[in-house]
Length: 110
Image (cartoon, rainbow, N blue to C red; front, side):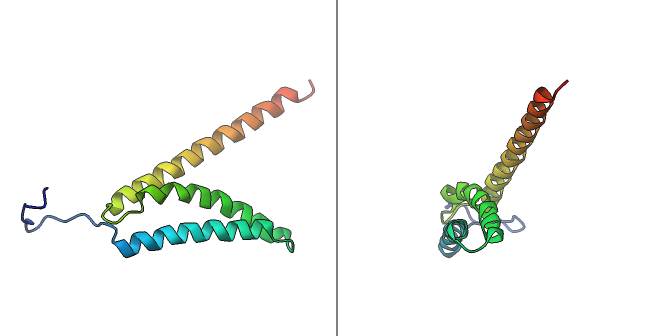
């Protein structure tokens, strides 16, 4: 639908990111990454280090959403990119676990 076409009644318009929402999402992702790094490099607690390690993974995956965090991008596109990144995480984690299992089976004494 071009900008010149009038909106038809009964047809839903796609929700898009406003400039404020896009900026908030970008800053939230960057903030998450900074908090994760601060937790990893703090010298006080191994528990906080573990939380930071998990947040680095989540932040790294969320950072893949940065190119989509622009005003005017449909929210549906943002969700789609997020699901693709999450799907890749699941597939790659499955491959890593399977390869570790196969390696353990290979080096097990017979």
